[in-house]
Length: 412
Image (cartoon, rainbow, N blue to C red):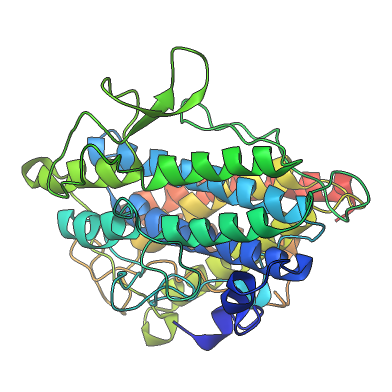
């Protein structure tokens, strides 16, 4: 992991939090920011694999899509915690993950190397399930060098509990909490954080939905694809949480284990490069599309930050979600349909893939980015063998045009 990923967080942060009876509010903010960065780091990892799956109706695709959507819920919930602590969530600059690497501040000896990979049963088992692996029952909270995400949240919870009084507020804070996101059929509700009780509820939902919990009466059996524990969903009393017995919804960990164990039915994938670097490409179209993806991704991250500021126009629905759901998927698949090297064959590969790099200054307006994609489409208009590439470019351009209208209306 590049050092820049967490250099915005103070050294010795969790030592201070663990060794003081009254944690500083700024330290709580930094710990919550780390939680947000951990959650966000998983999204490019899951989406790269998702876009590489050819059959969008397959169980592997639908499973991974549901997890990626729920990770967006986790990111929003972590951002709400930061806002309630009186700070603004950071998505740009040194908060942006780089790949390959480890989860921010994770123990490299016990957690997986994460990267941008083509989907496979091995990746589901050894990367995805390893990311979401639950802590053993009774595992202690850990801040720096944590062995599981649940233990990191445990350290955050302990620090918040040690703070005298209520560290959270909904007034006189520089940002706005977001509770109006919609995840469709996927589980989870983004809630406002106003006190320690609502904070605990938010963290419990994140942890139990992702890694799940291991109750003392039944230890974790890592190779078990299904079980009578570790399920997460809506209970009969209307609350949302872990359920013993009927599997309303598996945790992310068990979802990934289930897919990895059914390797015989794993769908076909596009022949993409893992952990891509466009500087290695010799196909100029692949370089241009990779560059366009990075610029769109960077614009989305800046808009995401703005979406939590209460003194700015709200670009969340018309910019952030539109880029994430309409533009980036189609640009990614356009890249994955493009040979990485000159005179290559997209049906054989190796094909390009998005690198998810942040550009601090795009150097081009959104309108210019749209025009560049239109130029790529024009060049392809006479090449029947590039039908898939044309289809994805057309969809990305249509999304760009709608976003361009929205940014003008918002004054962005």
